Figure 1 (spheres, rainbow, N blue to C red):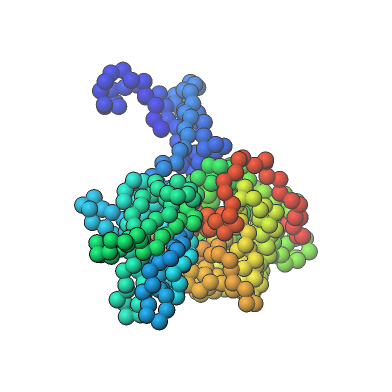
Figure 2 (figure 1 turned 135 degrees about the vertical axis):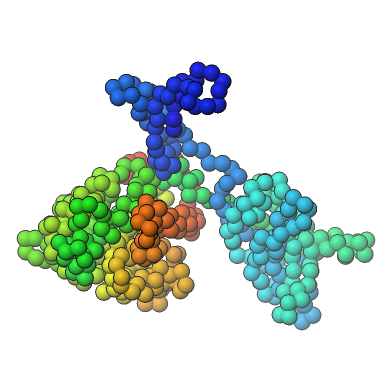
Length: 467
C-alpha cells in the first residue's frame, strides 16, 4: 500500500508527494483478529507517517462451494418390470439462452421416492456467481443402453435454493409433452431440496477458527553429514539447504494464518545428548515442556542449532510426530482449532504400518498432514500415504477423509536459479488441498461457524526426550 499527499487531479503519481508505504500479505490480513490488520506506514526515517487499517471481507459471489442434497416423491414409473431408476441433471443457463450441464447425481435404483447423496459444487459452476440466473434440473430414468427416459424438469435459481427448507424448495417435475396432451395432467412427481449450505475457507477463518502449524524435520543419517556439501542438511553460509527452502516456502505462507505465530518444531530420527538415545519426537529448541518457536525465523534458528548438537541416526519413523499433533487435535472438537503438520523428509519410511494407523486415526480429527520429500530417493511410499488414488487404510479401517498431501521437492527446483518463483510454486501446490481438507472436517462433523473462542491453552503433553 502506497500513501500519497494529493496536490492536484493528475493521475500521475510522480506529481504528488510520496508519504510512505506498508507491506503485508493477504494471509496476514485474514489471520488477524476479525480479519482487521493495523500496520504502520514506513516513510522518511524518524518521521511518523501514520498507520493503515485493512479489513478483509468475503465477496458473496466468490463463495467456494455449496453442499446440496435432493429427494423426490411419486415420480413417474418408467420401467415395465419395476419402478424407475432416477437421476438428476443440473444445467446452468448461459448468456445466449443455452444451457450447460454442470452436475449429474448418481442413479438410485428401483424407486419412485429417491434420496440422492449430498454433493458439493462451486457456486461459480452452478450459476457463475449470479444468484438469480436460471438453473434447470432434468429428471431421468436410467437405462443400461444409455437411452435414458425423460421424466420431467423444473427450474430454480441459487437464490431460491438458499431460502432454506420451505414450500419454495419443493418443485413440481413437469413433462411438457404430457402436459400438452393430457388435460388432467398435474405433474410427474416432486423434487425437494433437503440440504443446502455453503462452506469456504475464508468464511470459517474469519469466524475465529485458529490454524495451528507444527513442523517435523527428518534427522536420519541418510541425509548425510551436515558438514559435507553433499548433505541435504548442509549448513551453507551463503544459501539455504533443501530443508531450509522447503520450510521457508511453506512456513512463511501458512504462518500468516496462525495469529500467535508460535509453532511447535519437532525432529525425529536422531541420537540426542547426553546419553545418545534415539528419539523420533524431540523439540528442536531443546525444551520438551515448551517446544514452541516464534515464527519461521525461530524454527529455522532451532533447526540449525539442533544440527550442531544431535547425531543423525535413524530409522525414519513418522507415527510419533503424527501422534504428537493428534493428541492436541483430539482435545478440540468444536471447530475452533485446526492443526497442520508439515513433515520434511528425505527417504523411505520405516514404520509404514504404524504411520497408516496414525493417519487413519487422525482422519477423524481437525488435522492435515503435509509431507515434502527432499533429495533423490524414490517416494512411492509417500504417494501411497497421499491417498489420492486409493484411500489409505489400516487393519480393515479406511481413513474417514483425505488429510495427507505429498509433494517431491525436486519437482520445484528451478534450473534457471530463480528460487523465489520455484518456492512460490511449491508453497502453492503444498497448501492447495488444505482448505478442502479443513472444510471436509467441518462438513463431516456438522460444525457450523461459531463466535470467537477463548484463547487456546494446549493440554500438557510433555515430550519424553530433550536435547
